[in-house]
Length: 158
Image 1: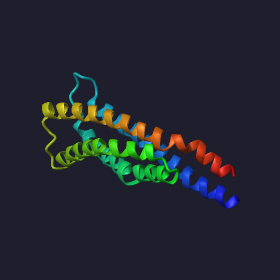
Image 2: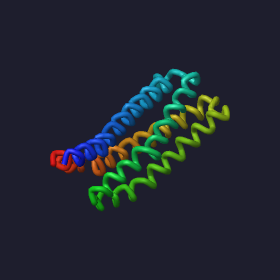
Image 3: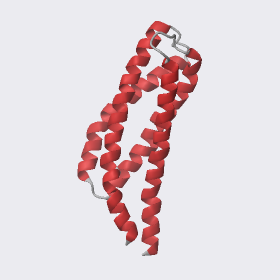
Image 4: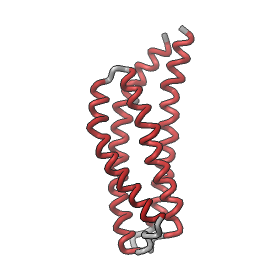
């Protein structure tokens, strides 16, 4: 009994901590984006491009290689077919946004992000896509994790 309590806490508590760290990375990404953009009339701080791109790649990578997998595993463990179906519906759009983000990073790594007019347009588009991605991710967290917290708590109390 004590072992099952500990296992549940390790299993689902770890998911919660993973999500917390990932959401902290999201805040850092948003802050880096905001400092890069500055005010609408100000030129883009191209010095901030490299740190922004590093955070961007770390954030999207953590989503794909850590968070989404854990959320899906949690839903499978709880037999949540509705959550798994939602994930299958949402993941393709998140993957498409990831491709845009990684392509932006690749162009900047190659030094192709120096034209401030096109860079501004690209950053605006990327910002809109990241906003959409954040909303989709929040939906996944709500359905694939938060919905199971009561079940996990009940399991650990047994």
